[in-house]
Amino acid sequence: MDLQDPRYAYMFGFLQADGHLARGSGQKGKLTAEINARDIHILREFQHLTPYYSSITERVRDTNFAEAHRSATWSVCSLEARTIVNELGIPYGKKSLDIRPPRTDFSRRDYLRGIIDADGSLGWTAQGFPFLALTSASTAIAAYLCHYGKKVTGTGRTTSRNTRDGVYNICYYKETAQQLASHFYYDGCLALAHKQANAESIQTWVRPADMRIAPPRRRWTEKEDRELLRLDDAATAALALDRTEQSCAMRLWRIRSGQVTVTRR
Image 1: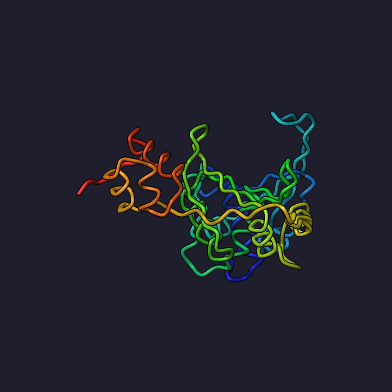
Image 2 (image 1 turned 60 degrees about the vertical axis):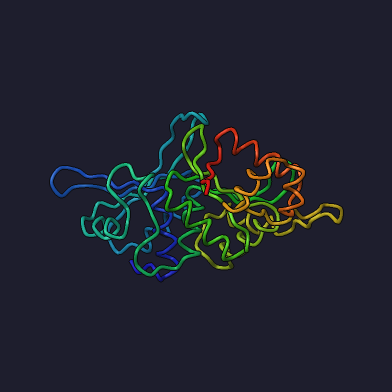
């Protein structure tokens, strides 16, 4: 499983996010991936890429989201196959918190496309804007997408777990989403058909002439925080720090309420 090969890099990313490696008694065990039956084509690609016996089965069951949901499951029992993917970075059992990019050389955009196909989404917001998003419990995966996304688009993202369910939600919108979708979903790549179609669809969006482009967010530095505290006045600090009064007032409130810690010198 050469992860410099775009097909295997994609497959590995997909299995890391949406596969399951289970142990059995002795040397028994199984690698599985269960997905919506509409995407069975990708499991057939995995079956073709795997030089070990594997099977694809379908079933219909009720879920929290739909009645009579039809799914397809790809299964591999080979100990050698399981050992390979385990050593590359798919742990046995529950793995959502522990997965991370491979430590060996790998095709980065194909690996990340596999992650996004499994745990991400892309398409149109309710307001009609392009978006590309990833939901992950893994700090390493979330941080890597932010790092890679900034290299491709120049747009940074911060990583923090949401308070409701403790996962990371990383979202890109408008031109940034178009750039990433075009980069990840190139012609001829291995991908879920409906997400490939969405990636192509959002390229048709054009920013309206009267829609302004928000300037890049300017981060606060420790030096600015200390100066803001010393001045203790939003209007005065706005002139001294070349920021808006509203920004200074909000930052001052966050410092005073303990949301931001400032080391005094």
